[in-house]
Length: 201
Image (tube, rainbow, N blue to C red; front, side, top):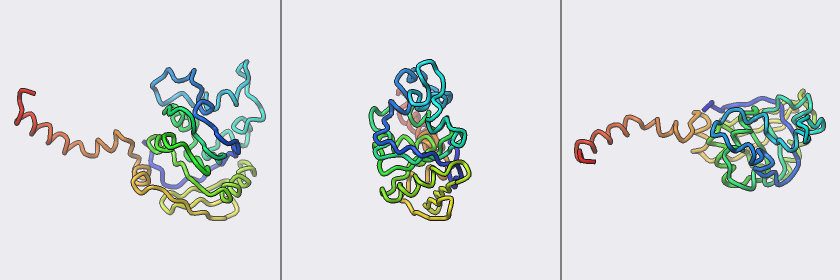
């Protein structure tokens, strides 16, 4: 998993509340077990019409937001079913950080396991960040995980909280497999010891 330390990028405003995982990636695209290739279908039903043409006024279809790496969203982002394909699609599109007043618990946890930083902020702060995001591609936001600060394009700084262990995993680029592999020597030693103690197993 790619390390996350400091991000300086375009922020897309998505003020809609209760954006659920089916809106993030519709169930028709859940047949794959690959993490790659889902970005094209991120927010599929909002990005495309029934003929597959882009809907011009959807934020991520606008020229200034096509390369967005941050989403500032309305309340309760990632609610609905607990599909891990949702953060897969977000990451594959290139989004590395989502800021909202609240997240569904499972989605929030899945973000960290897929290299995405979900940040919870008070409504008054999200309002400021949303307004800053509406300035377009020339107004880039900075997310500093090390210092735990979000900085707007005009220099306003807003601190945020994050669980220390989850922060460590993002900074080191460790998903669940990576965490396990950190202990591979101890695991091998244990397996060797057990095979000698219980050769019949």
